[in-house]
Amino acid sequence: QVQLVESGGGSVQSGGSLRVSCKVSGLRFDDTPMGWFRQSPGKGREGVACINWTGGVTYYADSVKGRFTISRDNAKNTLYLQMNDLQPEDTAIYYCAADPSNGFPSLVEYEYAYWGQGTQVTVSS
Image 1: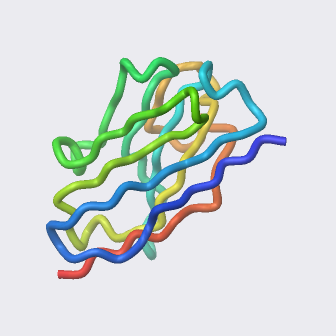
Image 2 (image 1 turned 90 degrees about the vertical axis):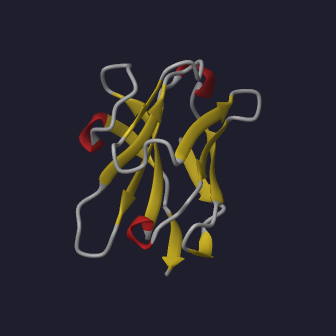
Image 3 (image 1 turned 180 degrees about the horizontal axis):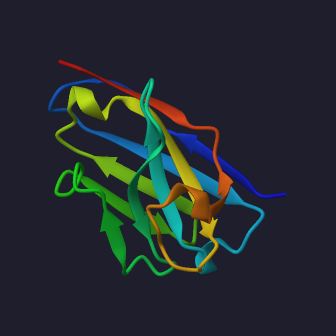
């Protein structure tokens, strides 16, 4: 059974930082591209960042480029998203996703087979 469990969300003031994590079990983590998505109230799910299986290839949404960093520790089966200079518009539930259907990192929601339950990030001005 594949499980993705996010942690590390919380509340922070504008300009602050948070790191969210995603612990993965039940699949070959070190062979699987991963992604981070987010969903704000009243909006669809948005691709934030994605990473290939080695960690050597990453892609970011324009809205977070230069502020967010995706990384992974294959020895710990864990995916990370370091978020710096957070702004109120970053407020959302953050989800990790695994195993895109084409085998490449992607910011497209429907390509992913497995999802975590999400962790809330709230940024106040």
